[in-house]
Image 1 (tube, one colour):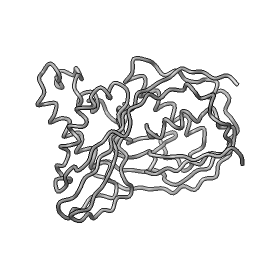
Image 2 (tube, one colour):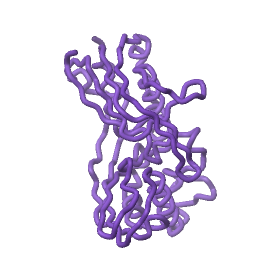
Image 3 (spheres, rainbow, N blue to C red):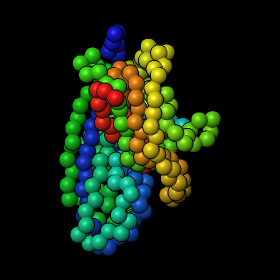
Image 4 (tube, one colour):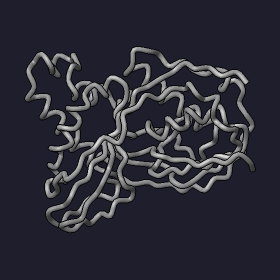
Length: 281
């Protein structure tokens, strides 16, 4: 077995807890609400910075807002952060209730960790105006790489649980099943978008994994979720898929995907998954 050690990515994950000070009604898909509040808080922070640190209008992207919430369309350009929030949320929160979520940033966006924390501490506006931040902490700051993949124990059974709706399309149509090939194609595309745009390196595609096209069977237990959240309709799949086959060489990338998420609208909370594995059928 030939292993290639070619890619790396820095990741910083921040855990946030809010407490509600009054009864509040929120959408069951709360990631979109958190994204909007986070963006506004970063924008306010940047406007208070000296021009030498932030010049959004000129497009220099030298500040947190310009680097994390860039001007290009989110649908066509990868953003260097994701939101992990409870889905579905409770909807109705009473005074004293709490909610926790995570904001994860990648690559050069990690250079703005202090700004991210400052923005998080002031994001309780709009729909979150009745809440206050009671806890922020860095879950971890680490460097992912595909080095060390040779130490992974052989695996031929992988169960992926799609926690929030995963939007993936083929020829413009939403997928009704997530084959292993579709999963890996989406994952490699997302990793490439992050590494190419937000690090000093370019993603080196492991062609031997693409060309090999392993025979993988799947047991699908997915259901479709369709709803609107503001101006952003969501049409995705949640549930589990069990994959059976020679999967070991893909695991380091699948592990990275638990932080990057997959599919569309990841900055709004879509595409989150976790996985378990076994070494036999």
